Image (cartoon, rainbow, N blue to C red; front, side, top):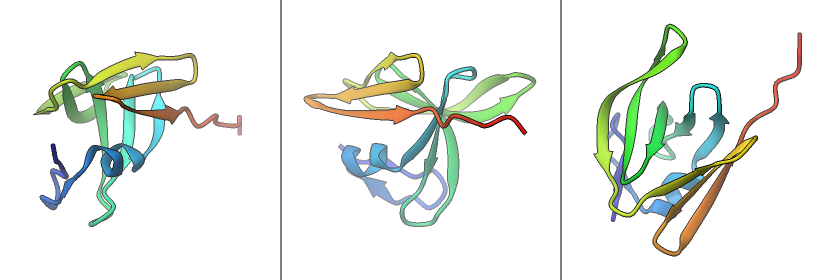
Length: 100
């Protein structure tokens, strides 16, 4: 299974794709992802069996496009999102922001 970058069309193995996730926003339930090829940054929501792409809007995340990833699972933690597909798993941590 190859997962596409919606900006440049490059396709990635799940390990490369989920390894490029950098931050989990638990409040909006979204993951930040940066394409290793073109550098485009996307916000996405990991859903059972699919990835939802969209934008934060008025305090929520609106999913506009979906990419099916059969077998994709997720588990929310206090400061992390655990993603699993087949026998592989990835952990995306919440970047703790310091008060200004």
